[in-house]
Image 1 (spheres, rainbow, N blue to C red):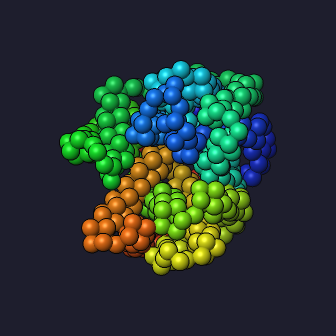
Image 2: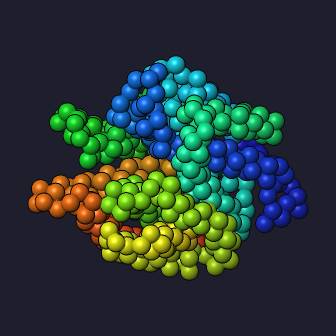
Image 3: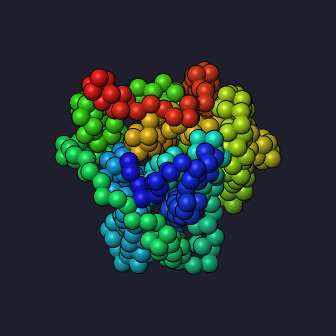
Length: 497
């Protein structure tokens, strides 16, 4: 990918550990923009009951849940395309389009006179959100020297950890004093400011050779990733037609298989919508495996913990928020520190202990009881967050650092797609295991709260067993070379010879 920020490099113009001119402003703009769009991603989690009670919308809980489901589906469909988009358009053009879509969707959702337009606003929002994070990751890899990438990736982990945690908190505070519409209208000015800043600070890019767009790959990607994420989101749901879940999963799996086969053929001529040659690099593959398992464990825990704290242990929603928020803040605040440690020591001294801490926290969760004091749950959650804090920044840096430059965009798209699919899979697995065991115990006469907690304990046992594979996979991680050879240049050199 060629961006507008690639300066000419005359001898002595830059030092190896410095950003190119204007690089800091560009990365700061993308970081703040990513924080704003991700903050709004989780905003609906605490607003469902308020939306259901609004007579203007006239919806039930299942319809309201679509505001989150549609957002995740759109993300799953758009993210795989971002690799091609970053190869086709400059950073400035793509950023302006993404933030303009987010602003438009946010305003539309805020003033929507009906549920249909509110849902459309969320979809338009998600189409912009899906582009911003891969764009940030790719730009950092292109602008930041290898010796400083860990520190910058640590800052990125601050954004992706703190913003989702603050989303429900900010939304809850808004709902205490104002209409749900201000969840959107309060964010829109911030997003508009970042759009204007990006418009003024990002330079125009050079004209690029547009890559071929394979029309067949687009619906295959949408049906594959979208069908899979939607199918996983239906697991554990009640009151649905019997055919809906297996049909969604079948469409997703078959379309995804066809998508992979087509990309493998198209990448021979560099025309793939999502270039899967990223997986030819063992370090990238190992990091993605660990990342996927970590995301599944994190999202599964985030969906399960509030349920058992409220329904089994009798805590109020505000108490639940106060228990889960410190861990997310810990992960975010430690991100830059861990990133700098990565630059100095490499990934293994950070990721391996971090993975063991995650395993310890998951095992501790299997010991939860109705009588467990809230402060012990807080310690467990902060222990889990501490493990993630030492895991995510090195994984981001190792994965993309293991790729040649021309695959940065596709690698960012793969990472973001894995996060979405793994998060949906982890949520589905936790909910299914918990609900199945709960139903069995209730049929045997066990109280609802105790049955739910027992189901959650089994889910945590399964997560701990699966995460053992993640711990083993961390043993293959190491710091990538500063410069990874470009396979295309190698092929051209051999052909010329």
